[in-house]
Image (cartoon, rainbow, N blue to C red):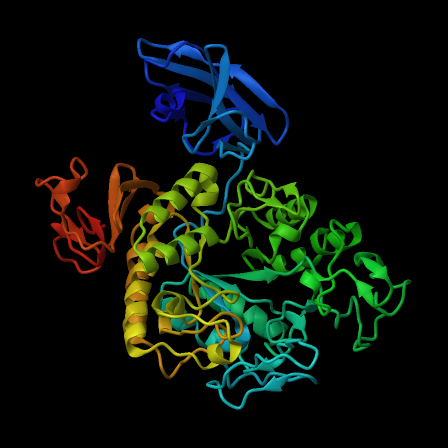
Length: 615
């Protein structure tokens, strides 16, 4: 059978990975010599989901190899190979299968990006800290204004409200009193962790604890502070070498807002109150006023019409919302639900941000492979140089948890192949590497728990047993090690370094345990921060896999001929470093950057960062 031959094909591409536009890419296939009756080999390529074009591949050199050159334009190419033999044509796909045409089979991908695409240098090599403001730190210098409808917890140890009302609605109206002044008070704590970027949950006025239901983009919520405190945070953080990015929620507003004004809280005429409101055309009313499009059916979050021009100008235009806060000194934006923003809106956000400064960043919330995502039936082109600088690295988070819970290291190899193969290098160096966040289960629980439940009452009371906690903490160290050393920058979700646990929202949003910090974990995070901050190879060094097998994930970061080696070993096996020759040899002296001790072996159930000398 021809399939028996074709599964042994070898595929080459120079250059590999994503490429800038106008680059010539050489693609080569090396089938076995004895395929019967082979006449022609074609490269079958599709550009930007258009029509397939076939390029005949020429036999090259003395070996049985066929090559074709593609001069590429900005966009996405997907390709496979067509082999013509004995008056038949069959296709060779990425998964090594030979079939008749099947558009559902996986193809190879080439991401082509703007040749001038760059991402801000400051963030590369940095360390981000994600603060959910209400749950991080109180301050004696600021008394939050608890508006009607909000309920202040008597103690930071109380469980967040989670029970729905009689209509099944969870109102997110319980608060703990964290503030921007509290963040200022804890800047030295963050500096000890070598944090260089602070990512704040939404700061604008809104009638909830999370503030994703924006009431007024032009005002700091007075639960958190005021303009003077916000400016002082920017200044004090800057004095310590830290920058602030804000959460931009531009897909929807709150129903209780100056724009929609469903409950008449504001003096302005909102879209809910009158069709003559200047904001009426922002929203999509099926039947005014009570039947309107909203985010995921949540009536408190009316959606903005896709690419609504007046709203887009309000956010992205001259003296618009982006301009106002960028001029106040923030370093960029994390965009909530970027999938739901139009291409034009994303381009407008990036353009407005870069017009303020090319050193400002735009990061999108995208949960899948952001290079080729299809959202709402439309192919998205986030990473080609005119929309996003970077994305939240959910694929890595999911792979890490799977690997550390199961010992299946293959998933790590595969996700890193995907990232380094599909993402432009400027994006890869700027990836926001998360292992948890306000929408997901706490990483300690995800790694340590032996059993999970969907029952909210059980989730509310759930605590890891001592054995589960110890297991989770040990695996968390491995997760953090990879988070800090793989391409991109780590984003610490507040309290992970303190040993916080809990199921997802709202139990991943408890108040920071300032009186009960896990000092062993915090010290480890501090040590990782020192290693990362002290070694420029983590800024933009190349990622290269050394070995992946049976629970061992071993890679290196390389720059200017220097290399740092990182491994996590969940197997029961032990290896001598010289087992990985020519990577390692007995003439070199290898040192752990974590312990300072010489390293000759990879022992079972261990992890390390290794260099030939301490940089």
